[in-house]
Image 1 (cartoon, one colour):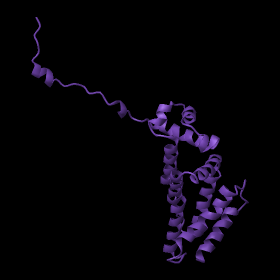
Image 2 (image 1 turned 45 degrees about the vertical axis):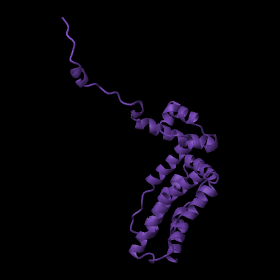
Image 3 (image 1 turned 180 degrees about the vertical axis):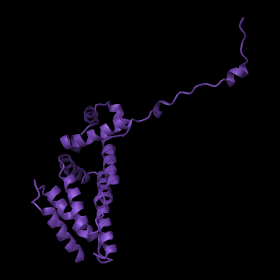
Image 4 (image 1 turned 30 degrees about the vertical axis):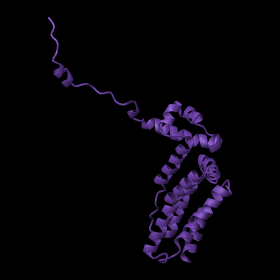
Length: 211
């Protein structure tokens, strides 16, 4: 014999909710694979020829996985440039202006002379001349990365009494970052002369002290 349940009891019965389709967790390993693929794709074909299809193929994922994270290749590249800015460079803290500069140059030189960076940086600079969003992201990356570390070196040297207080900080940053960037990115010298970074650190320290 069967009995009908009380309608009030039926309404009170708890029901299991399904998670919304858009609430799926984005896997970090997939995100990392896509980011790595973007760097490789940029180095291989450049920004103009880069496509979501090519990135997905190189990452071993479907296009949907890319579009769930970024709306377009522009937003993807802007995100990567911003991430580089946040990571920045290690801040030297040797207790000496010249030693700090040498350590900064050693780390920066290795990064700039990496084959992938050597392809990507000039290409993004060219795109920055045509795309204000990329230009803004590149400027932010430089300010928060290289320039941020260089500013720290200058401030520490001022506190130690190696540099005078009130010096022209913008000019100081140009002196620190300009020469190595010129050699590695603009001229793209295949190999720096032996002892070049040490001489550069010595000359830059002397120039800063003359400000």
